Amino acid sequence: MRVGFGFDSHELAEGRPLKLGGTLIDFEKGLRGHSDGDVVLHALSDAILGACARGDIGVKFRDDDERTSGLDSKEIIKFALSQAAESKMKLRNADLVIVADQPRLNRHYESIADSISEQCSVPPSSISVKSKTTEGTLVSRNAIACFAIVLLEEM
Ligand code: MG
Image 1: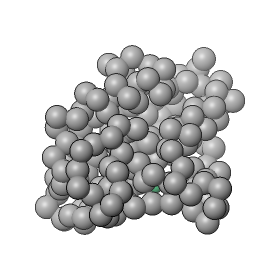
Image 2: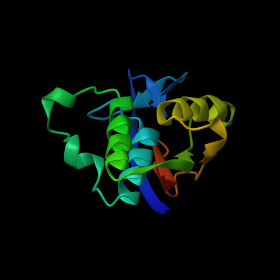
Image 3: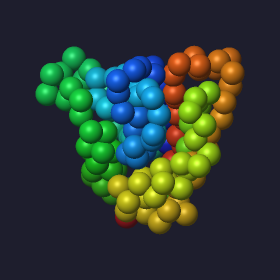
Image 4: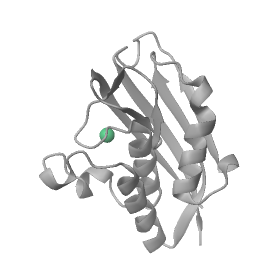
């Protein structure tokens, strides 16, 4: 068993869809980023890579690479899982804390967890999704961040 930790944060901007964990969330702003800005999948991918000591997603998906502009972050999590498989490891469970003052995410926990469980081929009960508001004290009120911790087990 190996533990991994990841973090990411992106700014909210008008005119972009809000995607968290690969799920579309109905909100008037979305996350600005070179890819689709999905902080949940980015933090989770970094946690998986961290558990295998295989660097971070920025090495493979550079933010100055035109080819990955607007990339669906499901490709990023796919890459992280393939790296884990090369290390003969697979995801056992993940605990995610999304930091967002807006929108309120409580009613989306289940759809986010379902989406991630499908992408990672684990039962929904292996994915915990929580959120926190911090009144702008940790993350800007106009941003969303995510902390992810994972446990990988040998295949
Ligand atoms: Mg990111």
